Amino acid sequence: MPKKVKHRKWHKGRGRNRASVETRATEINFGSFGLKSLGTKWLTARQLESARRHIIRYMKKGGKLWIRVFPDKPVTFKGSEVGMGGGKGGVDHYVYPVKPGRIIFEVDGLREDIAKEALEGAGIKLPIKTKFVKKDNT
Image (tube, rainbow, N blue to C red; front, side, top):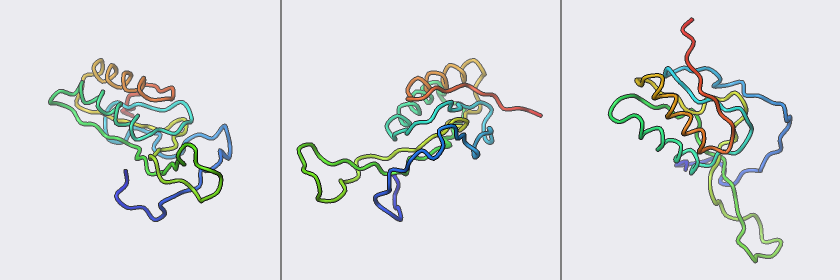
């Protein structure tokens, strides 16, 4: 959850272009291995935290993890049996709208087989298809 936001409630937003792909954060910048998104979806803070905890289990006392997304988009919710009108509901949770090509997690300091197992397991926790990527040393 963000500490402070300029606007407490946002518009939902419409998918401008279904075939849009990410232009930022598509390369591995910090670690050696990463988890790249292949789909479009809202990632909730709970899903990201679940995936993060899965990766941390594999790190034991070595390695470093970078989370390249931050859920700062508020999603509002009106309670059940509340009539029409009366304004927009209260903020329920926060999401990050991810597009294909975005690096979600990066890790370093792990062997490739362990990093692959950790990141692919974390990808199962997320509602989108993901793929394990390695840094290009070119």
